[in-house]
Image 1 (spheres, rainbow, N blue to C red):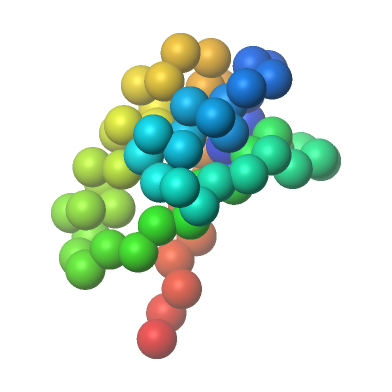
Image 2 (image 1 turned 180 degrees about the vertical axis):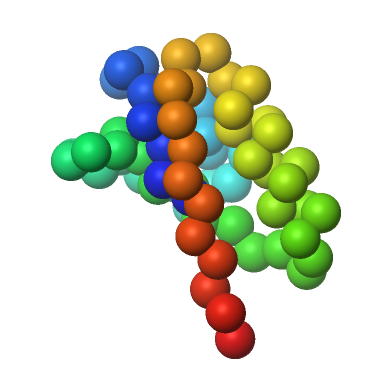
Length: 65
């Protein structure tokens, strides 16, 4: 998931959801990677991320196997 947020420490907040998050440069400010078993889990994670103060936008990408 790509996350847009003007908050400099957004990746730190995302680590509370998944340890696999890191800041990036460009159009988005952080990446969050998670492994889930079903689509309802994806929705739950998206909801959690979008509720973090300062998150302006997210874009979710799903690896198809």
